[in-house]
Image (cartoon, rainbow, N blue to C red; front, side, top):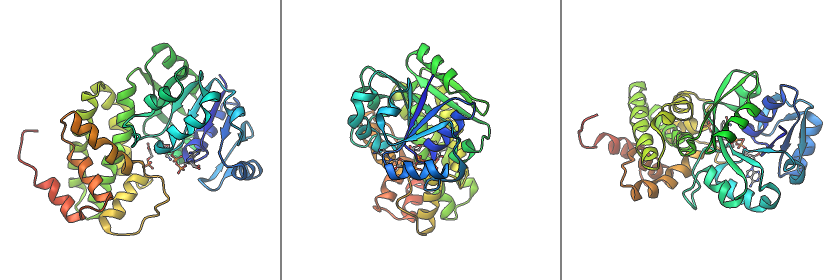
Length: 321
Ligand SMILES: NC(=O)C1=CN([C@@H]2O[C@H](COP(=O)(O)OP(=O)(O)OC[C@H]3O[C@@H](n4cnc5c(N)ncnc54)[C@H](O)[C@@H]3O)[C@@H](O)[C@H]2O)C=CC1
Ligand SMILES: O=C(CO)COP(=O)(O)O
């Protein structure tokens, strides 16, 4: 199956490199023609994934017609950009297998990737690729396990086979909601975990925060129809552990900066900020308590201080675990 990747950020570039590793042709699309020329001449993406060599079997283009010729298209742009990208190119992309790789919830609609894809391209097979995986690790060919979610089991099996390589081990599920929410919400908890570490509250507090964060991820996901085992798998717990414990994570690093009052480059992609805000109306409409997401949303909007954030979490009523 011919594959293309939309978005030449860190993740899109890493996926293109890994998928081309087994000798198959892969198209990597960027919206920026100058960036495409630069990557073609250097065989590297110095802007987003410095140091990784892009094999010649990756065709780099800024022409969407070339990328859309492929049967399966991975969409690796930030979540808040996905709906606009699909709307702009729906005529070319509809009918393909479209695989969302962003980890977030659309602020405007409260939707995850598959609903965004199906709204823009109703004839497409909508799927999600998610799980614990840093772009730099994938590009180096380090072993990585990911979850491919597609509501149609036959579609999930086909895409699982198409995306599996020597280094990418792909598990499949039909639970798209669970896979999407696990990937989106772990970023919110990772910001909170970073705040805990940045503020010097300690690793015991981080473990408590991760556990309570996982409980609230489950509460919302279950209310929206996800399966508990999906949340306990790679796309939920697996990615939560990775992102809350590694300074390779931008969400975690952003939290550390908030917690320690240090600078952070605002142009960095940090999906958890928008997701924390997007999730609160969903939680309210399902009468679900999400104190970690509330705290993160309030912190990123500078409505509370770090001290107030810690007090918010510690002053909750005593209850059964
Ligand atoms: N970097 C990583 O380790 C991983 C990232 N992801 C997810 O992948 C998504 C993308 O992240 P990264 O590639 O790391 O971000 P990045 O910041 O490295 O790159 C984002 C890319 O998207 C492009 N872009 C932005 N808006 C666009 C638009 N409207 N049309 C076309 N291109 C557009 C930018 O030019 C940039 O090249 C995020 O949702 C992230 O959570 C998932 C797993 C791992
Ligand atoms: O999702 C990721 C790892 O699985 C990447 O996390 P960050 O977006 O926080 O860097």
